[in-house]
Length: 233
Image (cartoon, rainbow, N blue to C red; front, top):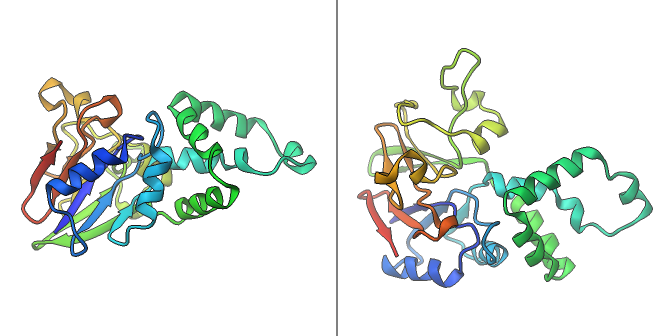
């Protein structure tokens, strides 16, 4: 079975394991996590380490992982060179990350050994911005935020999308993506689209949002692509 989840935002690993146990997740199953497993909550680094060593769980990079990578200078050895290279661009990225809940992850990473921090950063650098999978004769695009818009307001093709598009886009309820595949995304909590979607997976004709609001204490979700069943705590 193939599952998709997203936006855990540092919730406890016990909750994730409880959710996976609910579907009897095993070595023959596969889980795609569509980014933003860090920040806001206090257990994001623990979640990274968990996924790193699970061969059947794959992380797609989210904007929060990207913010961490943009601030990796925080974990460099302090030298005259590193001080000279500290510039306003780095200050801006750090401010953005802190404003979006990065302090929790910074605190976690500061407790890790330098070797483990390096391993985590190298792992995140290798995470893809998207993936595709076919299940039950249907094709799915798995991406953190969605697809971007051209200057004329049309949806971009995947090959036209920038990193910023894939990490920061937010579709509207009326957005129609390509019919070549169903796009599955996170990034925008489903309650943003109205109270009736709060804490639930949102399905449209061309895209599905699986960010059910774990960042504010709601249950994370699993979507099983084989039969489109939804699972919550």
